[in-house]
Image (cartoon, rainbow, N blue to C red; front, side, top):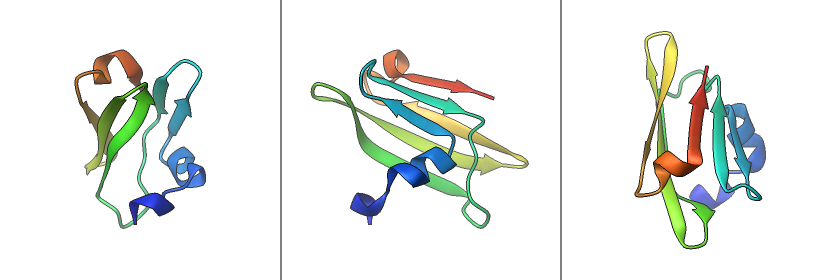
Length: 79
């Protein structure tokens, strides 16, 4: 259930949300064992602005793709 996705779970993905700066930082993205992909949709990042994130396991790494008209301004991914 999407409403049950807690802050503890977002931090375990390497995801940090900063409401003050309206930014989403993803450092060293990872997924729990047994989960090969995870989509977060409609993540609010500003007044009326939302983004979608897709975490996907590809070999030994996890790739993050972001979508939405404001994703480039709000999402930073680093290894």
